[in-house]
Image (cartoon, rainbow, N blue to C red; front, side, top):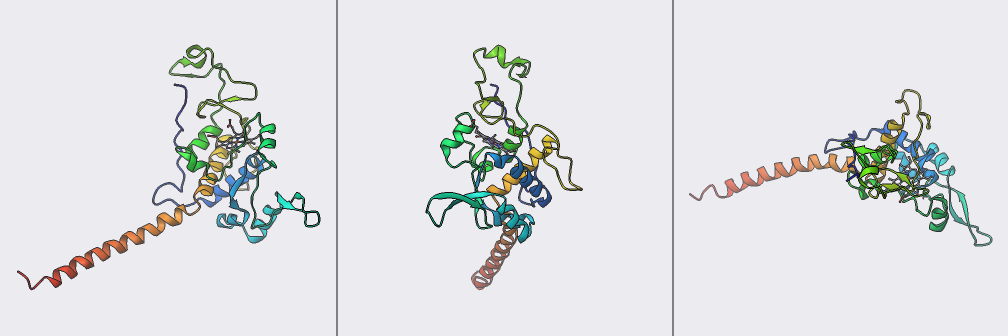
Length: 245
Ligand code: HEM
């Protein structure tokens, strides 16, 4: 079995006490915008949602305007594209699935909005996948080489061997290949391949569940209230039945 489980990834947003690391989410967004958006949409995320990551209204407008979204020519009624508005959603770079297949060896780059929910160990999976491309000729587990165990196994033309991908050959070429591919702001960690992969995974955890931190935080006072109400009910019951021996 040469399919690997994702390596552990600890994000600040994990667990019932987790909080967003806004600086990391902004770096991850930068990676998405400058690398992943060339092929992948985020159709459930509107540009204005980015204000939750700390971007100002003006910044959101500028980000939106940098994307072309599907539109309709008001004069001819023909489909065209126009610069995005804050209320638009992150579009696919392709007009349709046929064009997407034509550009990607017959595979459609999936929408990434809910990817970390759709896959087991979502964020950890994305991090491992992005950093998990290996050389099929030398790849081994416990000293066993794929080449020796399954001599017929090959990577087809336009495919890329990646043991974290369920069917081992993925149509996505390694998107993060060099440190510094994305330039991070002053004071941020070095943009190594691993750092960029972590950051974009954290960002995709946010796109999939933007209310996660709020939801867990609201849970604590709710539990406190329920405990208080239970004690009150117990005391009231004692009071009501006090006269009965
Ligand atoms: C598939 C993430 C950049 C093309 C995927 C999948 C993820 C992903 C999570 C789904 C894997 C699965 O189904 O389990 C990313 C991220 C990127 C990125 C985070 C940026 C860092 C790109 C780029 C391209 C691309 C730049 C095009 C050149 C594809 C294609 C697939 C895919 C064609 C489908 C693969 C298949 O089904 O064999 N990507 N991607 N991706 N991606 Fe990307």
